Image: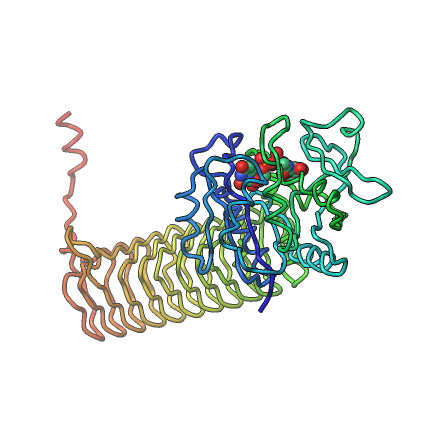
Amino acid sequence: MSDIHVVVLAAGKGTRMKSRLPKVLHEAAGLPLIDLVLRAADSLAPQSTTVVVGHFADQVKSALGKRLGLRFALQEPQLGTGHALMQAEPHLRGSSGTVVLLYGDVPLLRTATLRSLVDTHRASHAAATVITARMDDPRGYGRIVRTNGRIAAIVEDKDATEAERRIDEINSGIYAFDLGPLFASLASLRAANAQGEYYLTDLVRTYADRRLTVETLKLEDSREITGVNSRKELADVTAILNARRNEALMTAGVTIVDPTSAWIGPDVSVGPDTIIHPNVHLEGRTRIGSGCVIHASVRIVDSSVDDGVVINNFCVITESHIASGARVGPFAHIRPLSEIGEGAHIGNFTEIKKTTVGRGSKANHLSYLGDTTIGDQVNIGAGTITCNYDGVRKHQTVIEDGAFIGSDTQLIAPVTVHAGAYVGTGTTVREDVPSGALAVSAGKQRNIEGWVEKKKKKR
Ligand code: UD1
Ligand code: CA
């Protein structure tokens, strides 16, 4: 079993977000910040993961409730990062190995970076290893003070001297610790500083005094340790995550016309030779096959789209399946639990709900099809409406293979149009239509001669 224990600090208030939602639950590119951090942590296959919560503790805990095996430690009140880590001690007492400390609001860390943190830490048999980076504008961060090239202390911006403020190597706040000396050393921290907090960073000096080795891992790309403190930073982080995601998809053979406006969630898959046009949103557990074209301004949520499908502009598709070779849109709304068959066509201003459309069937214009089973090679005329709701209950409509529904038809469910039957234009279908029959309901047309002339005279 792995001897890595992950601790994620997430007790802070996040004042600058100006939000009623805890900061770590704000989403970036389809996932809450804390989930992004936990996913990166999962890649280390840790023996345990502890989240330190404080502000909004209940909200954070219930949002993470679905994750199995997560432990929580409550930090109340919040007396600084060192104090936060102390709260995890009861969970880790008696364990040995490496603690990897992460922040719930630092979501860009790559798996490979966490791996090399652990590798560096172990190879050097250090008591602590800190991820650092050089920054053009290091303001606000703790600075890495070195003597003879080795890290000697971390000084917080608010406590730094003029000379220390000029140091451009900063503390990421991400560390690996050997569990051995950790909690005993934390207990010796004092809050004698500008913020009156127990600084985790003071551990570096404590370790130096005790002749315990502290190592650093200096990152090439300082963006990886960007923290989210404001909505502006949330947008920055979102853009970076999105660019990474789209780059990976393009490498795998997907054409993305404008990577800045394609929003493809972390759990979405897209097959090679699919073309994604601008302003496309693919969300949740969506799966897109290969050789598809997704035109501009389409949103697809928790759906699966097979190979060679064309989704035209301005469609919304939710919890549905589109089989290969089908064409959908423009302006179509495919609502949950629908199934569009192979080679079927769903055209403009057509709404489909809880409905199966068979192979090669067409509903090209202005229709509502709800709670309906449509067979193969069926033609649904313009303006066809299934009246599935009687004000109390929903009812089923069945339209069997090869049936032809004329334009402006209302099908009053429950009702069945049997295989090959025809329904004339403008029919209100209240009763089943047998195979081979033509259903018509409108009366005979009457033309009243001279009617217009008479009406004008009256005025
Ligand atoms: C911290 C570091 C600083 C580093 C910077 C990197 C310290 C003293 N300073 O500063 O050297 O450059 O991160 O981003 O460690 N938290 C708690 N409980 C608390 C306080 C904080 O859980 O009592 C959590 C916050 O929710 C957050 C993280 O710890 O996830 C960092 O806290 P924050 O107050 O933002 O630290 P910084 O001042 O940014
Ligand atoms: Ca911070």
